[in-house]
Length: 284
Image (cartoon, rainbow, N blue to C red):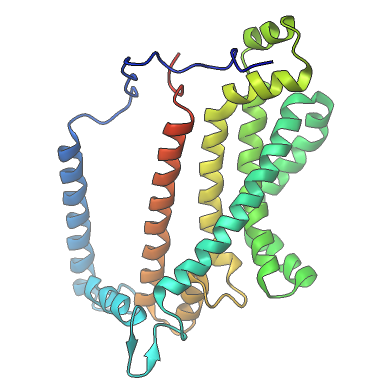
């Protein structure tokens, strides 16, 4: 059984239709608008910091910039923050996020395909997935610490469990809602149940699955601070929690920027991968 029944991309030489909600204007205009917005936000931040004059409440952009320099270098015999450079803190957190997201995505894909193709299993297991998705990460992190201690294992479990439900839900919905015409045509040509799933259903569901993957990575990012509340240094979340104890608001803000900017970069890479791997998305 081949993949002839999977969605096909537009013929070579045919321009891919632009998304209906694509922003108007050229690339230069959009970049200029975003730069202006960033400058405006920076000015508002500086004004708010000067008016309140309370660095513990709102640190100035200059204070955050100074912490960026201090945490990225060795100064007065002190290396970065808590003995680790900022890039090292971020690297450890990103490694945890990547491993946890990969485990969660793999588990979510498997569970989603099973829920989308086996009706009785969906009736039994779907409430469990919804239940786990509704739980805040800190609610079960304490349980993982009791079970696995305070090393890497509970952190990876937390990020994996947090990333699993979005992929499972998106995959189950996409697989269950696969075009019935394509499925019936594949079976009429002699394809078995799992051949139909592999060659027809999954290619059709890939756009929704990829959306679930992006959501899962975002959930893992939002959970990293919770995952690093215990023995989280080195780690950007651990750095934030440690700075919070000593009211170092400028370090906390710097850590939030590090997480947010790296998250934007990862999401941009996922968008590029989506465009390359799913060229038929948006083509009716």
